[in-house]
Length: 469
Ligand code: GDP
Ligand code: MG
Image (cartoon, rainbow, N blue to C red):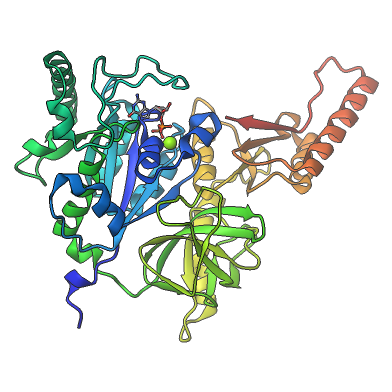
């Protein structure tokens, strides 16, 4: 049998923290992309996965002269959404990961979502490393925060942090140390010991802090090296490759030339072209066959458009785009199951639908309420949670995942006869098809005419598509 140390899968690393601390930018910095600037409002809406092969990590960390013996084949990093009501999605992201990066903005210290992320990680006993980001003095023309920087900091692109630190003036070092001390105190208030990583002699008890800049890349080599070294040193058992397929759907997306595809994270096992798979769907379990297994070019993110590499089979851990028939109604955030020769199809179908059941249970049984539509199961759950809170308290009669179609508008207009104020679709991060828009417009006009006839003092009520964010 293979020695387990020689049979490790890539660790899955989740990147968490408060919105705007630089999570997406940090990933961009490592892979040389520009996902962050392409995002709507600069806020990450979905979970995305990026694979960093060992040779790239070796290259990136060579200045550290750690002659790093990399036993893992690479590192799979998962970015999490920044929207504040997305605890649920962040929770899903973090549940996939072996280790995490907790990003803290050196100018802001611990913020509400830092603490929320911290608690999620603690709850799951997930090891993490703190990236103390924005240690630079680049003034960004497009940055929301022009003053978000350490004044007088000397940048040295992609350098290890100790080397960078030595180049700073006494004033800058003092300013840095003052902020660092404050942040260590804030962590202490949360019951956590933290220390600069090169001073940390008791990793495991004390969490390591690595100063970074996602703009000029300082500290990024240190971050990569520590992530890999720490995980392969302490998580051999967890990272030992396991044949049983463990796979989660991150996103359902139409890709030109490929139809509807799903982006998945394969945590364990192997997927093959031609495998029969089952995924959870809006209208029940979807049984289909893998047509193609695609990955972006190494170091490129699944969310980034471009050409893909085709594979006959892929071994975990990896982020993969799968093309297959009938994926239109697949639901992001649920599990993917492979049907083996010995397996009972019905059993697996039932298992696959379990995630959906818990969401269905939250719908108002009275049949009166608004319709909620979101891009993923996770964001839908997050919205349902939000609507249920006492301050909001809006009943929900229907849910859907994916674009708003004509049929969704028709469904929402039914509420015009029951309770007009609920004839609404709350649409989050989804497209509205032109037919649906047309239908909405017609319903609006009809309703206006109706109201005029009655000369009602009420304002016209109509099925409206409301975009949050
Ligand atoms: P996220 O919400 O955590 O994913 O944060 P983003 O990656 O979207 O970054 C938020 C903003 O901070 C963007 O305007 C970035 O350009 C800026 N930013 C990110 N990292 C750094 C950094 O290291 N230094 C500076 N000065 N700005 C940064
Ligand atoms: Mg982001």
